[in-house]
Image 1 (tube, rainbow, N blue to C red):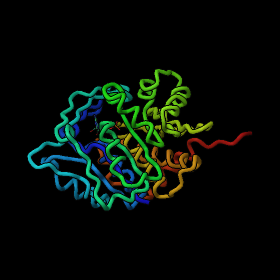
Image 2 (spheres, rainbow, N blue to C red; image 1 turned 60 degrees about the vertical axis):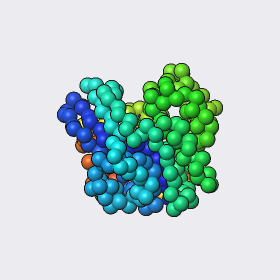
Image 3 (cartoon, rainbow, N blue to C red; image 1 turned 45 degrees about the horizontal axis):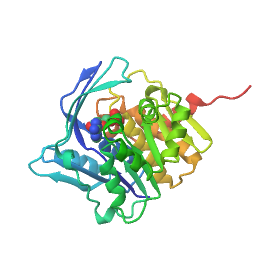
Length: 305
Ligand code: AMP
């Protein structure tokens, strides 16, 4: 089934306790589409970059089967830039600098060939832009998944509230779920988010896994305990890409299949953190992914005496 992803394609500069990078390729949609590319062959991207964005990276995306017809390259303008610094525990970070550049007036154009998409992943960008994408599709996709962040909860709350009414699944981290609902309990927070629109809520807890909530049902996926975590940037987006990519591949949006999908998402995220930026998820094999998913099964299986 075809997947359409919208979101940032960016330059990032990162600092973790293990090192520092200059401008490397990042962006929510970059991580999402790369991750989803291991599952679905019809992988369409809508995003905007400046003419400073390397053609070689666009070629790399194409080599992963990602359709970049909807990637607008603005001549004379610069690509979105974000820089972040992680705290020692690697679970929290500060945004050091943001240069919106081309994202300041991103006006997403949906190519005709994307119009029949079945799955829509609204990756991190302003809620008003995410909503425009829904409105510019002639037919509502079968499943709309939304990712957002603390910034939009703070500065674009009314837009986000309107958008929430239109989506099926919200993916947020624990801090964002609490910020959005003013509830400390994640069970209560998920229940409150479900009254805002999305009938399924995924709450990511970084190295402590992810929770999946739907009507009357909860599922927990652990995160793989890793010896080395170099850079958590993009882990959330990689998780979302694995989740929706797996759903698009299997074309089954039942709660039971969503359980499998969050395990695949968690497996993809566990690769992402092993190297800086998107390096690791650009070079994966199906065998490596299957072996990692088996590790998750082993990690959380037990028998009752
Ligand atoms: P994650 O670590 O999964 O939360 O995502 C990190 C990615 O989000 C980075 O590659 C950034 O380029 C991107 N990002 C950070 N802030 C924003 C923003 N305000 N809008 C869109 N993308 C952003």
